[in-house]
Image (cartoon, rainbow, N blue to C red):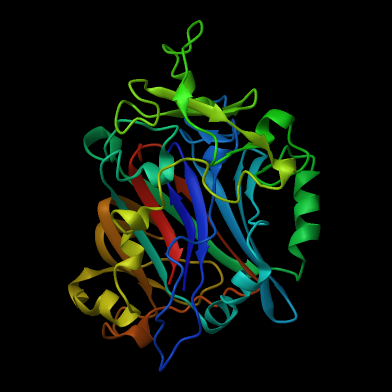
Length: 368
């Protein structure tokens, strides 16, 4: 199993649980590579660089992921982004409870924490951030350093996803929930996969302001900026098709509204590359141990990997980095020495600065 708590850059933030069938002889053979994802790009005005967004990615923000349980089983997963009293909630209410339940044993027994920073071309990374991103590649000034600090594990009182969601949607701190029924009508349009794409002809200053790459859904239509690469509507760069309301039986967050498939159709995310934890660390060497990292709620933790540094509770992460958390810097590089995060009924939270992590880049914080 894998739980992508964060796959993000300064324009999009995605969170995805991936379940597996029961293991055979200690190995997982059938896993869902697509997962049950939610992405901020489906919530208009929620996330991006600038003060007009609820989460302004030019500034650091907090990430809090809760693993809800009931009677010893995982019943929900909720990721909350917080900045200056404003929130965006990825509640995963569209994920089937039976699907999430398959992650119970892994979360209860313990999963390893991986932190990676990678990225490629705009086309390859479209699954994460297009729109709003279009032609940028993850290189040069678009691939600056990221900072993660104050990682903390804490207890969470048992609560059902439904009751927790109602509380979030109605809170007074201005939360914006990806599945909230209280959203304005224009935020509840969803894709109609049977509707044909057609050219959109710009009105006023739409072209100059990059309107097509930002709007998503408006006035009963879904819009997609293709940047001229593999256009869905012939020669046009801005395409549109008729949408439908979430009330018609489809949630906007149930599946990505864009035509680009999940990343596994082209280049798998590195998190899926190693088939087992053993193989994931077998090629690393003891010299890659960076030092102790202070994690709240964890007795001792040591950061190992390449592409960054640690100072107290703060990690600085560079492009093409990869890190794992170990229990002791003196122990050998074996799977049993990797820190096990037992997060069923728990919260894992941290502070992240993505201001220099641009389009087509992916800072990933995930459990395997």
